[in-house]
Length: 204
Length: 257
Image: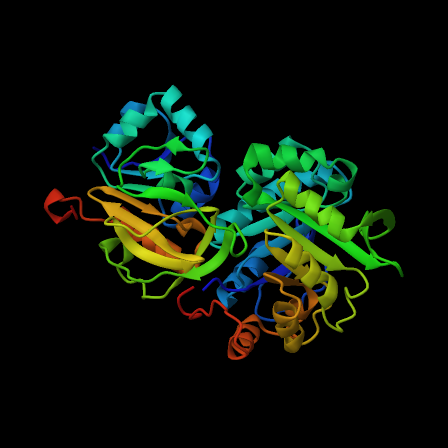
């Protein structure tokens, strides 16, 4: 592995926002869908805005599903990226990549859906949140959510309590958009870039 | 708890902010990038840039501006004005905009709402709707409020939602610029019939007007321009006040930005 930060290129938007956020931290990422370059990168970010089924079809058609699942460096999924890392999504009944043990559910229509705007995250339980105060506000846009489970490392409340972030081994994911979450989001991205990669410190 | 959003709006022409903005502590108050960054530091929850550049050639300055904004801004921002094609949207999103806003074009070609949402996702499609009460119903107006359409507002916003709009930016033309408060009735009605968020615009003059639009008006977000630009109301003071009134607000430590 080298020092590169790779951003996975695929058919689900907002890659530019993530690149800009990394630029603000002094990083020029490599946007790529090349399996070799992804395997070599020191860090991989998997952004996403869009819909689960077409995203999975795209990843499968390019042989990326297996590549992503087998990566061993610190890996961060954002929004749809996080949802694609779960076991199954209710969005068009789609089996997803399965790095996390949770499932993706649709918000019941008891309030406005999507959950759009700034909300507080609590139960921050991972080095990913170093220096981020409990109850900080971050920016969400999503209609599907991941219930709390064994891999939950941060929680949020909207209609239901749900996972604001997941972590398992080298895999991390945030339901919110750190690239659009002000200083808090920048701190999280910076933490991710500086995560200890010694496997003994990984949460299993 | 999901907070209510405060959104300053900047009118931009040929890459510069238009209305006289009297911020004394800016090197260049005409620079949308610097002004946007200042609002972000003050706790604005999002920003909206409305491009009123008249000519197509000069619109190229917009994507350059969006690139500069996105390099400097760590909160979501929307760009509106003259967007007609999937290619227009693509250029703005690839330049770093998070959402685009359409208005007149949606009335002329409603199928473009489906097309934009299908191509880029509903989350980035904001539909602006300008309305005025015509004596018998709330009517939709286009072309910056100059042209009536005969379309009834509730019917129209429901159609926009079903076509894939991600948010509605609702402006009451009778209230806009008068500073006598938002149009609470129609805002509340629109918010109640939709599942997607509603941004209220037009009429903000006092901090209590914001209280009203978030309670009685049931708005999810409120957008304003001149009261922020002329510092009649400072965003940190406004958010503090709203929070004291029991409205969920994202209050930030200004040092942290």
